Length: 139
Image (cartoon, rainbow, N blue to C red; front, side, top):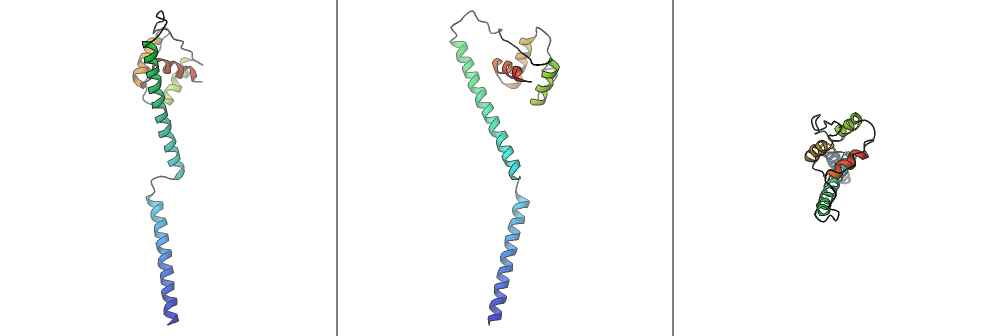
């Protein structure tokens, strides 16, 4: 009788170990991404959400500033477009950061800053100030 109990215990132990092994294998095979990939994806999503919120706040602030500007002598065309390096360098960096920008979007000739900024505003959905700051921050 004791031998039957030992045999049953061994069967239960083997079945438990097999179940655990099958569970681990299923988890590894069915897991969508590893931990690092999941964390990276979460960070990308959080950064995108942060950029969207910042962009909305900046557009809202720019709208308020333009509505309630005290200095009526200022012009929307006044801006300081400062580039670190050549336009070619800046253009390359913009293409790396924004895949959907085309050569036509980034076409720039001296004196054509307004046209460039309008195209980038339309394409990227950012305010003029954001575009100017973004270009100035590129190094």
